[in-house]
Amino acid sequence: MIRIYRAGTALLPDEETILRNMVFLDEERKRKVWQCRNLEDKKRSFLAGYLIQKGTKEWMAKEGGLQGGAKPLFLSYVYSKYGKPYFREEKELYFNISHSKNYVVCAFSDKEVGIDIQIHKKGKGDIAQRFFSTEDRMLMETLADGGRSREEIFFALWTVKEAFMKLTGEGLRQGLDTTVIEIAEDGGAGSEECPGGIWKQGRIRKRAERDGAYFQIYEERDGMSKYSMAVCSYEADGDIQRKEVRI
Image (cartoon, rainbow, N blue to C red; front, side, top):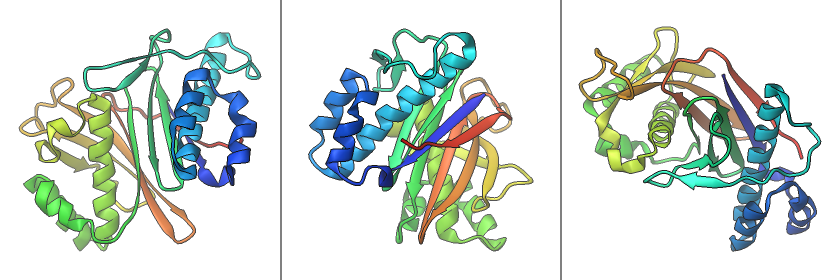
């Protein structure tokens, strides 16, 4: 099972609101919030900490233990070679954070997980031509021929790439052109939901363990803005739950 929590920065109109709600965060996250130099960064940092607390509490409550109204958890982290965070104590719970413009998202699972969210911006299509694999560029053309917006297609595939790199913990070191995306037959990048798989070059047929992953893409709107979000896991997961969080 994967749970995705999302919160918008509109929940925190000013620094006073952040200060008033700092009681919901653990001490380490409080320090990170106050290290941010501008208000928008403080909002995103606060929401990241808030979602980590909320998601962890709800997961532990379901597993049988923690009360939902408990005080902020003391959360201690360890980091992989390339900086991916893990809970030091909660060995059976994985999480991953992403933010873009007005939204912060956090994914939780009992297995490794990666998540990414991106606001759509004009003039980013040239990134695909420069850094995507030949197969991915061909997929973009195929989807565009089906009537999808090139902008929507690009950001959908971009979030998959980012979510996979966060899943593996390797980041951009592995290169955007080293993976190939497959869209499920009943999917279509740019639709509200789109499942598929992402595989390292030469492994599409073999699908060896950890040479690829499964994903789900979500497309959302916030007023005039569009967002793409993708979540990745090494195993196909039919139980993905999404929750909008209020403070």
